[in-house]
Length: 102
Image 1 (cartoon, helix red, strand yellow):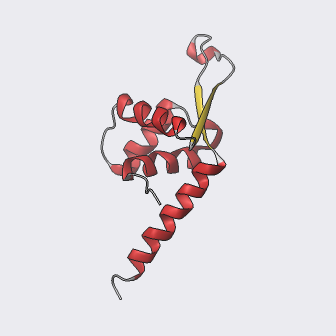
Image 2 (cartoon, one colour; image 1 turned 120 degrees about the vertical axis):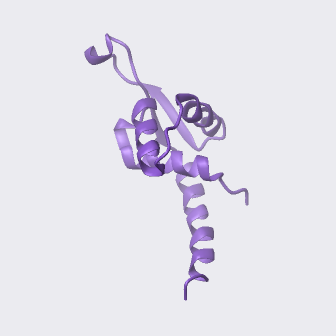
C-alpha cells in the first residue's frame, strides 16, 4: 500500500471539508488556517494536479461568475478512489496513535 504524503492528505481533507466550494483560493485558505502556515498557490495547485493524475481527485470548471469578472473556477472534488485512499491512511494512523499515550 502506498501512503499519501501529509501534504496530499491535508489537501484532500480540505477538499472534502469544503464540498462544492473547493477551488484553489478556498483550499489554500483552509490549509493555511488549519496548519498555521501560509501556503503558496503553487504548493496547492501542483499537488492537486498530481492527485488528479493519480485519480484521487477530479476537477471541472464552474459556470462563469460575475464576482470573478465572468471567469470560471476550477472546482476540485474527491473521487471514490481518493476517499478509499484517505480511509486507508486513517486506519494506519489510528493503529499507530492507539499505541501511544496509554
